[in-house]
Image (tube, rainbow, N blue to C red; front, side, top):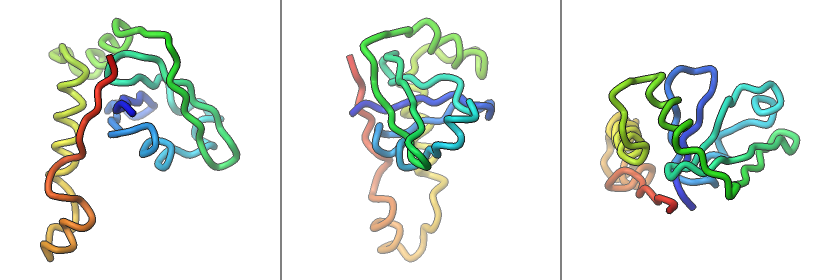
Length: 122
């Protein structure tokens, strides 16, 4: 499953390494309240969110709108030219800021030895 870029009331576009990870993080009440303004795959496909009680069901549609994805990213930072590169940078920075880093065995068990891989849809 491709990585997702999620736009919400928070000015920072959030990246999730997979659809499953995003569904585990997002809450149904936030979807019902319209907190998420747009969700895209890194390749520009539109993702539909539906609340299922407290859970969220995400569905990748066939519709693409890479222009809107780029416009939303550039509204946050005007030097972004590539959603995939933005997602890689975001995930790397999140991984570098992880906690705990000590003891090392716990860090490796919780976070692995590298940022999560980024799957790109075509």
